Length: 289
Length: 282
Image 1: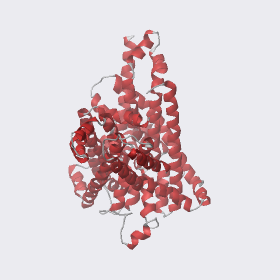
Image 2 (image 1 turned 45 degrees about the horizontal axis):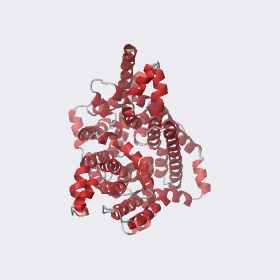
Image 3 (image 1 turned 180 degrees about the horizontal axis):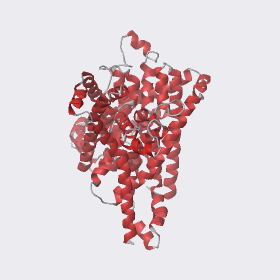
Image 4 (image 1 turned 90 degrees about the horizontal axis):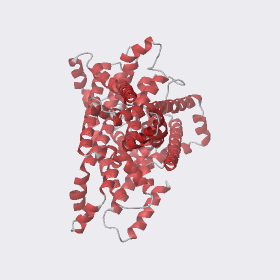
């Protein structure tokens, strides 16, 4: 939590500088810091402090329990698969939306944001109704011997739904800025369209693909509402980590819930930082935007 | 040269539309199909139910408190970040985005740890007979937490791209700081502001995980619309669950329509967010 202090310090220093014309720096930054601390920083630090409160031994005992490990593995594993599916189809969708014209394109483009706008509980019951054994899609998949609802596969479906806009909206602006001339140059030099894609387009998209992946992944790991209806929620099989937190809270096991929360927070912050670093590396290496 | 390109184009469009149809359109359609499956009378009955009404009112109340709180914060944060240079600015922007990286369930847990009966302030609240957790204040707090970054995030790039020339001119012509803000800055950022409010409101009204943890699920008292949907669904009252869900789906469609309208009014809103955030970060 050293960074806000740093910002306040720089605030003090900056105020002494004379060339500032606009008023309100102290007021707005002060209010920002107070509100940020009250709403986000202090509440979040409560999780970490409470987990220390019950001792490291207890923390380890909770976290290493097979049921907890299974739920963490499921949450991170299913999110990884869903984010990967989103990268593939998000690339196709954003490519089609940027490069081609077809009827109702604007409507389709607006629809991509549906998972942002549709409440997760609604998405959850809708997907369950679709993929349940008697649902529109479930019936058909059942005849192929594929069970989606109430299995880990259902979790992947829900996480794919909520993650899609992150990839598309990250890729679109980059694709729009990508010079078509570069591809045409590659084509005149004798490259096939597949070669042009792999050698010219993909390297330029790579940072945006990673960012979209990271955003979709981060959202998926913590997702609760859309998953719990379709998951079946069987311990050790289809129980995601956020659900286990809720279960422990309902049993008044605050220390247990807090321990899982700390692991989730640390893991997702670490992964986000790692991918940010990777993205930074890709940006400097390819000299992209 | 032309023909293979054309066939790959048709194929790619078909793949994209099939994927979007399966993953976006069908879930939306199924909500309305299920809601109306027992006829319009059953649908109207489910929505006219008093507990459904209580849930609708609570959802509106929570959004009416949470969104303005984050609106004031968003304007203040964007003003500080875009009009001034200071050390730690990129760290501040990262911290503002922090709630996006936190699971909604953890957002709810946080307020249980602070204000629950065994929480840091639990004893104090009990002495003064104030209920936060399993009551409306807890729901509001959890909603403020999950919608915290929305408005700031949309405003920062908008104000960044507008610079501070207009404000400096107003000030040099003798306007006070507040006059400058109300008459110059606010009109300039109105579309961006609405855009942020729209997105924050959709999330505030639709939030499930965080609110579910702090609500206590007391029917007619602490159930928001998404929680009401869950209760009805778990009671196998599917028609009623989907009827209430269809109202939320309509809200989502209205939000998307409003979003498209604002993007049409001000095309920079569309992609400005990420690019400018990167610029302020670097």
